[in-house]
Structure formats: C-alpha cells, structure tokens
Image (tube, rainbow, N blue to C red; front, top):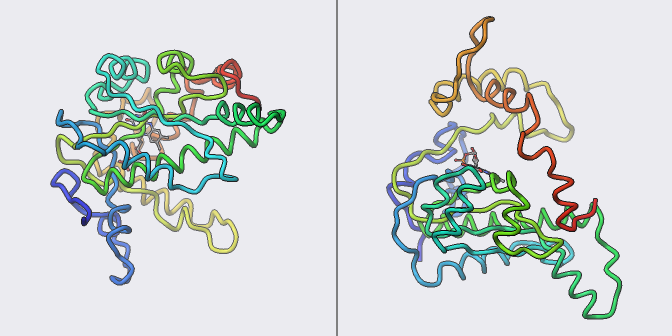
Length: 278
Ligand SMILES: Cc1cc2nc3c(=O)[nH]c(=O)nc-3n(C[C@H](O)[C@H](O)[C@H](O)COP(=O)(O)O)c2cc1C
C-alpha cells in the first residue's frame, strides 16, 4: 500500500518550503514523507483501525537498539479518564482528545529482571545505561511516528509529561528503573497543519570540522522567516522598555532559556527516586 496523503498533511514539504534544490531522483516516497512532518495537536474523534497499535509498535521495535538491549517499554493509553489525567499532568489539553496516547519509557527494570533470572548481579546501571535507554526509547518512538504518518495519522510528542514525572509513573504503575520520557499522541488530524521552517542548513551542517562562520547570518535569516511565518504571533508579549525586537525563533528560544524550567528543576532527584542512577 502506498503512503496515505490526507488534506490535513498536504502543503509544501521541507524541500519546497525552504527552496532547497535536490535531484529529483533522490526524492523517493520515504524522503518526501519525512520532510512533510508536522506536529498535529487537534484530532478527529474517529477510532483508529484495528491493528494500528501493533503496527506502530512493530515499527518502533524495528529501530536500532544499543547492544540489542531494547531498553524501553511503551504504554498505550486509550482509557478516556487516564488520557484526561495525562493531559492535566502534562499541561497539554489536547492529549485527552487523541484516540491513542503512547507513553515511551526508558526501561532498566526488565534488564534487571533478566540479570536476576540468569543469576547475575545487575551492575551495569550508571550514566551510560541511562543514556542508552533514553536513546533507544527516542529511536523507537521516531520509528513509530514515521509509521503513523505514513498511514495518514498525525502525531505530537509530549515532553510535558516530565512536568510530573513521579505522578505519571504512579498513574501508569511504572516499576522502579523506568520513567515516562515523553508521550506521543496519535490520531487523524482534525484540520490543516503546516511544515515548520527549520534552521538554515548551513547553521546545522558542518563540513569536516565545526564552524560558527555561518551562524550569525543564518540566525538573522531564520529570525525573519519565523517572525513572518506567524508561528509566534500569539506569543510575542510586549517587552518592558528598550528597543522593540523582532520576535522570531531567536527571541522565543532565548526567552525560554532565560530561566530553568520551573517544573523540571528537580528532575534528577525525581529520577533517582524512581530508581535511576547517574
Ligand atoms: C521530545 C519532544 C517533546 C515535545 N513535547 C511537546 C509538548 O509537550 N507539547 C507540544 O505541544 N509539543 C511538543 N513537542 C513538539 C515540538 O514542539 C515540535 O516538534 C516543534 O515545535 C517543531 O514542530 P513540528 O514538529 O511541527 O515540525 C515535542 C517534541 C519533542 C521531540
């Protein structure tokens, strides 16, 4: 079956949006799908077809996984009350309206059980195991995301669940040495969505060695594009005195970085409470 294109996911892909010339022969369906991604935050109530969950999880499990440890678990949430609670805890109201919410959890609990089962000590559990589990989880999630988008579904990652990492662990009855890294809402898009401009490639791509030579010019261009795109239209709060500034990606990002996230400042201690070691 070919990839499903819906009206909601139509519009220019990233090559068209950013005017990047590329040989037509390199633009296959997979590349086009990847470059059409946009987060979807509004869903039709339609149920998902039978078998979709298993297809998404099979795609997720097909991602590369460090040392074949497969150090993650996925909790599929469809119960309306539990979705509502996840929406509250993550401060993302639309989570309640998505037909399916997948919660992606780095998982050393299962590996510890395997060690115990085989009669070994579970000694490999420091910082690098945390990183391996987080990376495995993210790769699995992105495979699920692409599979969903190829079926005409929309997704949105929800890092907001880390605002309440302990409460989410309780809600999902997560065992020690797991935690909810992020959720992903899945469903049919309720309306049109658009591809968001990314940083100019010459700011992100360094050839042979790292260089900031193109940074300033790239940021200036990107600020103009993002300010004109309207994505920050509702966010550009008036400034307290001083010269009015262009409200683009740089201003938006720098304002967010100006203080630690109020709900995540204790994350390391909370993860330690959940059995993680660094
Ligand atoms: C790990 C992760 C966590 C995210 N958390 C949230 C979230 O809590 N709420 C939300 O609305 N979007 C969330 N997003 C979506 C990003 O805001 C979005 O990917 C970004 O603005 C770029 O937009 P695009 O995905 O439409 O290209 C998250 C994305 C990632 C990768």
